[in-house]
Length: 202
Image (tube, rainbow, N blue to C red; front, side, top):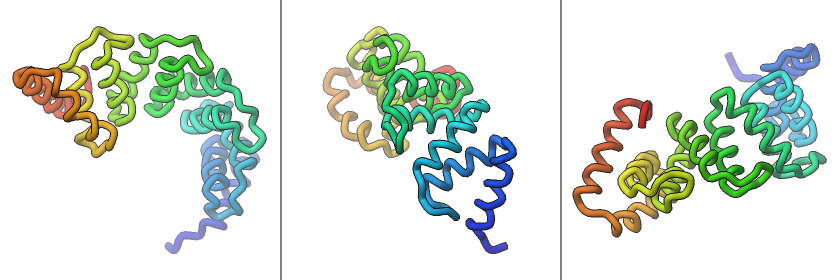
């Protein structure tokens, strides 16, 4: 069947107006990207927030981003952004966990707390989020929010680099300068085991 984004958007709108959370989330996406509708960020904000209030994790993430960026009439409010990131994170959304970790790391909308930052980075990194893996690597490297450990720093850096994350690719050579060849080998072995376990227990 040939795709018809315009007709699909019309049906989503009917369902969304009746309170269907998935349809509201879809409309948030469609209005943001202009898929089947005229691009309208204000309407995107509206539909994402309605879905977020019904507990839709991705919409909670989008609503948090709207508050952080001050999108289309949304007042810039870092505390509100962190609130929505937390709601998304608590449902296991890896991007919500990562952004909440960043908020704790820099103290944006929450009290600065590197330990909490690491906690949320770990949750996100365990789901394969490369930015969290990179940030967790840095936390271990500098000993921020966690005991300094170059082996774990290299392991998480390797895991992000293996997924093509450019920031980790750039830092890989820099990191090994403070490590023995044995520690590098151990970090690489841990990274391989972590991939086998699909990041569980890493």
